[in-house]
Length: 295
Image (cartoon, rainbow, N blue to C red):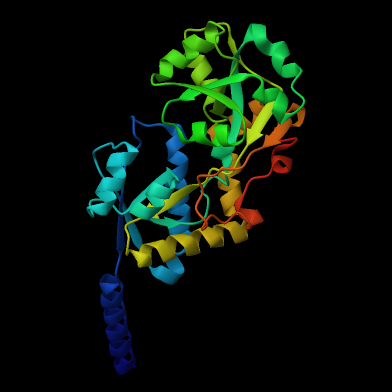
């Protein structure tokens, strides 16, 4: 009996040492760009989900949020310099050359769902739009160096640009241009914070183009890239990815306001995507049909 007790004790001691020696992956990431932006919390929640789904295969992890907020250009530089380990960002060819993308869209392309901020007096213009050519007869305004400007122009739309973001609202308010395309997660929040009371979100039209947001890791960090890809795929397969996407409070509110079943949808191509974009993986992308009837 005594021998069995000693063996059990030794087993527990060795097992305890084994647990203590198990490697823990420390993953450094940036905080939101400006304070606590609830829209950005989704990406951290998704990062945690991917790490949890991969824990059984890849082991324990520890998230370490660095103290300094960073805009994306600095975040990618810090990634290169091994000061952080992961960044989430809308993709571009430059970013895919600078860092290693995990090619699973984090928002299923939601950033490419665009509605229009317009002047109330111009609502009838958009009631009468029946084709992309009709829309091309109107004038859009965007930021000078925004990737959306190139996408819209590539699809034959007339786009004027301005260097100053706030000036764009002034242009729309004064009727100089017809519409300001914004993401469905941005438009209503921006209207609520603007001083222009004559602006509204057009209820008739929705533009859709593929605009993936990815996790990016440092070039050569194959271990973390593989782990994140595995975890995201697991979340897709068991439904937890969609649950997080559709239940996030900011997303739920935006889907409700979008009222997609009442909108005419125009699909655009995105010339800025690399050939590694998983366009043929239907489960990685949001569909308009998924949003129809959502409350």
